[in-house]
Length: 262
Image 1 (cartoon, rainbow, N blue to C red):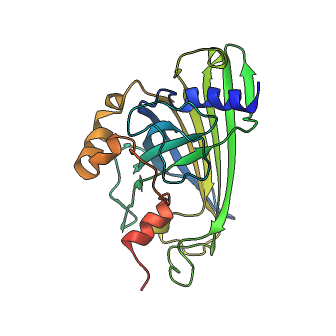
Image 2 (cartoon, one colour):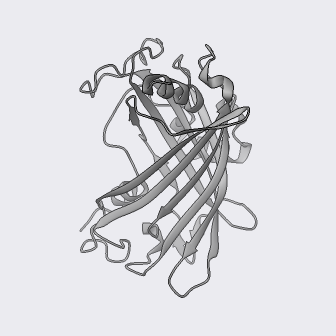
């Protein structure tokens, strides 16, 4: 398959070619690691991402969201994935949403936006009988929004480093179908520093997130507890954004907004 065909197959798996909203939901756990210490399951973790795929035929048209405004689906060789994502840290046993941890307020994930630009590239794909798996390995390293000098209790390093590992599983028919979207499941592993609100400073170690989930038929299939929590705090997270905005939000930039440097 050409890179453009592979990207279109990934787009059918991750979102929908007709531009309709697609919700992925996931659940899992967060483990800590540190030199000389046992691994610990600190939190459960549950989240969702609501996405809309739009055409992006001009990589330089940063403010043009393609057909999102008029309902036209993406037709070009490139795409923009317009998304919001929310995720919540849970008590590892009861699976209830936490509000505090070790006496500290928990800051959940409210990433708005969490966009992506897609260009044709050789998407790693493995054929697994009647399924295929798209694997995306994303190493991250960039200047931290929380410099240690300004956030000594919340930041491990002046460079933010993490590793995001995604696998999206779809029916093998995704390679030949004319349908805009196919059912899909996913796995996600993330290695990251301690979260800023954990106040671990420059302590060696960090976190590993290990989750799995699926593409839902609609946002209404998100568990009732989670939908109620979102509706009471940030109801806009029930829908994908209508247009492209920058920059993306992360847990680190969101923490900085809540706690600007002195």
